[in-house]
Image (cartoon, rainbow, N blue to C red; front, side, top):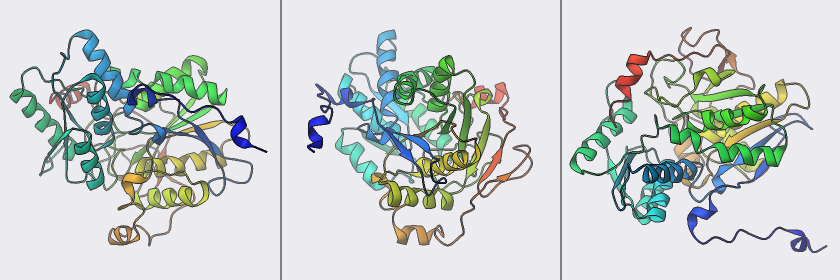
Length: 367
């Protein structure tokens, strides 16, 4: 049989922005779930730069349409990497110089890629004593905005256009899967968890949303701690996190995410970074725990390539003691996020917004 005769024609694109979206879904079964069970993974690493190509292009397009961003004006934003790649794409698409403010945790390959794509990379060297690296980056963004009149910051943490950008992804999932009962997403800025779940609930009002956070993250009321993982979790309280939308939240530790990433690569030839590993761990648990026939979709925000020197490096992982500890097969449980600080995979079905409105307004002030 000539399989190629039945394959769909590849996308023809006039520009790189036309390659964003319409990403595939992949069935993930054993060893994450028992035979015949599993979940569908939305492979957002198939976008040119990852999942945040979607909000980067959308936020820039909407700002231009409103007149907030003038032709040729600089774009300045804080990023741990993936949004930076998306903004570099948006800068090429719409003709804007882009400055990405980041921190020493940015992987060298991503820094080189950002430079190759024409973005300027600004590195902060000291974490904020309360808000960590994220707040330090945001304060640097505010400083640079003051130095460049007419420059614009997307403010991914609080910009509602970040949330709205994910409605097309929800439409794609409905077309691909038909029905979705449970959605599993990582949570960082809160954009894709809020955007996808809101759009899906127009069609599936009983959808359950499981959030996946990092140990040491403050998003769901845990105390701030040192975080090795990037791309999920936060030291601040992003305004885009829709706490009321979540059915439950799971916190995942670095060793558990690494183990999951490597299982994905070995058994499914599809893996990614910290968020992907953490989401797969929790989605696999959901596939084992929910009734048979429950249709579970999980969002994989990126691919593995930027993590070859970290997650997929035995030397690096041994140096951070990530390969020695046993990985639990079930999460621990707490009744309330303030019950105790968790250091390993833990779930909680009580989800509330830990940041008072006044505190959130202060944290949103550095733009």
